[in-house]
Amino acid sequence: MNTKAFASQADLEEKKISWDKLSDNAYAYTAEGDPNTGVIIGDDSVMIIDATATPVMAQGVIAKVREITDKPIKYVVLTHYHAVRVLGASGYKNEGLQQIIASQDTYDLIVERGQQDMDSEIGRFPRLFNAVESVPGLTWPTITFQKEMTLWMGKLEVKILQVGRGHTKGDTIVWIPSQKICFSGDLVEYDAACYTGDAYLADWPQTLDNLAALGAEKLVPGRGPALTSPDQVKKGLAYTKAFVSALYGSAREAVAQGMDLKATMALTRKNMDPQFGQVFIYEHCLPFDVTRAHDEASGIRDPRIWTAERDQQMWHALQQD
Image (cartoon, rainbow, N blue to C red):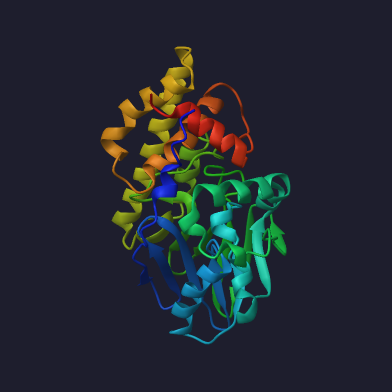
């Protein structure tokens, strides 16, 4: 049996952290294709958007926030349920955390598959789960919403929205209407592969159009650098749409020709490697992406649950001879 490890298990190099000020209220904590964290500083409190993978890693975000303000970090918003985004939430407990906010769809996914996802992701991406022993367990939202929620942080209006399915069923964005700043979670990526193992690929392009209709002038993607102009935002949306469209188009072509998973992978690589082969985490994501795309193109509407065992089976099946 081929025992080649996940591409991500060889990814041990520390990434350079960037801390970008988007406005007097909004900041982006990014790290060369690792999962991003957004920060909103309101009149009376602070909101964190995506909580990093472990409480120990959250300390890096907290240190940046504390360079600017001593206001309590009252809110953590989860853009979706993936472990690498949510398991660090407990790191904010000593900083004034009062509410963990997520869509009801995200809550339902944690109930259905949160534990399997946690076990699966930790196995795939050891570097991202630095000090994993500090994770007390699953992160549970304390407030859920459907479609839309408005929060006032003093005089600053913050909208928490679902604009459609894409990366997951529960995708949530955070929007500051007065400043036209969006935190998109993994609905938008830039210079990084889209992980689509739990995606709704047929829906994703329309969801991007719905997001574009907001008219964001700055956007913090799930991975990749902060997009700090309307032109960059357009590029990020176009990049993401091109990635998911090429992936799903390849799978539909493969399924129409009766190809198995390995043949689908070969066709997808032919179509996608020239444009996307060099971006962050491409080699890690592609096996999961092709598996989900093949499923969806075959009529499996809802993503199957990834378990650590299923990860290994899929990975071995797709290794090149």
